[in-house]
Length: 78
Image 1 (cartoon, rainbow, N blue to C red):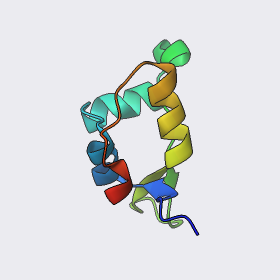
Image 2 (image 1 turned 90 degrees about the vertical axis):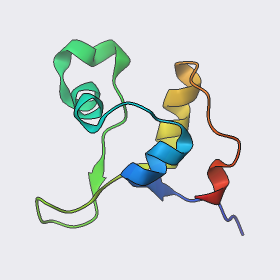
Image 3 (image 1 turned 45 degrees about the vertical axis):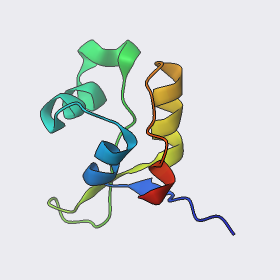
Image 4 (image 1 turned 180 degrees about the vertical axis):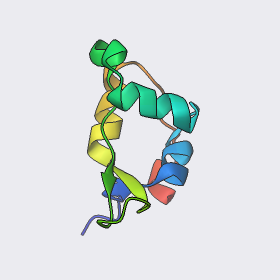
């Protein structure tokens, strides 16, 4: 059984090494100007508009790898 997390929230992104603001992260997800540098889209835990967003770890790590970003060594300890 794997102990790696499957999803991360905003704090989990920060622990992975993502140091870009929330506003710019949202721009990178949805703005057409970032079409070639698109950050993985977030998902919601519930149906309410204020539900907490989360990202799939595999998609985020694939983005980091594709763009040459470093991942902290202890990301599994989220």
